[in-house]
Image (cartoon, rainbow, N blue to C red; front, side, top):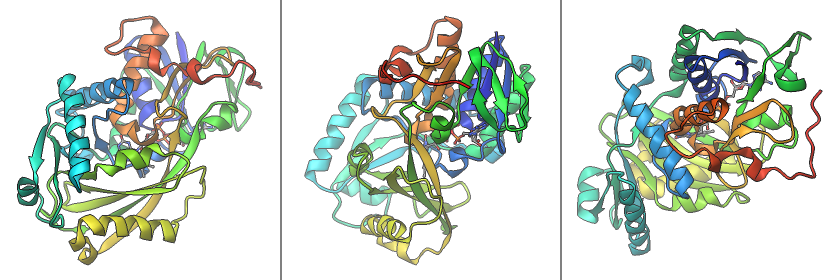
Amino acid sequence: MKVAVVGAGIVGAAAAAALARAGCRATVYEARFPGGGATAAGMGHVVVMDDSPAQLALTARGREVWESLADRLPAAAEYRRTGTLWVAADDDEMAEAEAKAGRLAATGIACRMIDARELARREPALRGGLAGGLLVPDDAVVYPPPVAAWMLAEAVAAGAVVHRGAEVVALGESGAVRLADGTVFDADVVVVATGAAAAALVPDVPVRPRKGHLVITDRVPGMVTSQLVELGYVKRAHDVGTDSVAFNVQPRATGQLLVGSSRQIDVTSRGIDEAMLSRMLARCLEFMPGLGSVPAIRSWTGLRAATPDGLPLVGPWPAAEGVWLATGHEGLGITTAPATAEVLAAALLGRASAIPVEPFRPARLHSPGIRHESN
Ligand SMILES: Cc1cc2nc3c(=O)[nH]c(=O)nc-3n(C[C@H](O)[C@H](O)[C@H](O)COP(=O)(O)OP(=O)(O)OC[C@H]3O[C@@H](n4cnc5c(N)ncnc54)[C@H](O)[C@@H]3O)c2cc1C
């Protein structure tokens, strides 16, 4: 089968590698450079999340594949199993942490509750007076751009062809793609893996940009040990319509801290929003006052691809023959790219999948009244 993959972010690169390994003739079209989109802007937290059973299955499988790749990843990937420490500010959040622990443990994800004393001992930079937290020790962190390049190299080694600087401007009949220079390439199927830009090629696809800010600090080795996330993160990330910020700090292998996070729906400007950045940092200082004396080196933004139900779109798009989607990963595309590639390849080739493919089928969010015009 001849497959055109549009976009070489981590999702497109992982998909191309999986498809090429499965025997497809995969050709990748990347408008700019591999891993330069949201993949370069993301935090690289490989985290099991449990907003829904499908999300839990996809993130757990994603983390499992990451772990299986760990020994082969390039050193530049800086893959480290730091664990996630979900920080509970009060008794209500401790109750939430316990409920979360129950859900994770029920699917075999290692985790354990820690009390206020242990929290202070493990992460002394956190403010006093916090209630405790939930430690998920097998979560990891990674620097995604070199991984996207590595996955693309794996795809090429398995026979894929990559066109860089190849912007696809239109999808034609049954898998064809037209480039900005007018060239048309045929394929049996086109996989649209263009992240938050998906709607530009598939106009009615329900993916909206959700902007996020991050800051990287100077080197402060040992200040933070695990990836620290406030438990309120889940609630804030869920509320799609409202701008939100949450305390989220990642220790990098370099000794730097990656500090987030913010969410703004339908904002496509990539500039720093000073008010949002200030709000985000103020939230982080509430949890970690000492951050205020750590110099910030750089801040940037990126666009997550949000869907109405918080799950990615992986599979055929009913309104356009030959068009498959691999997008809509919001804040979990680094974690889930390897599992997405498996789901996509299994669905496309009719093979068995490690996890169910149904919950990710784009048809669930397709309104039959709306037709995609391919041209
Ligand atoms: C601030 C922030 C923090 C995040 N933190 C995390 C995290 O901690 N953990 C996690 O798992 N995820 C995180 N994410 C999410 C993650 O970064 C994304 O889900 C993931 O990178 C999406 O990858 P992608 O390949 O779908 O999209 P992208 O990386 O955006 O790749 C899409 C590619 O398509 C190309 N393209 C677009 N249009 C065309 C076209 N017409 N023709 C050809 N090529 C085209 C682009 O140039 C780009 O290279 C975060 C995201 C942000 C913004």
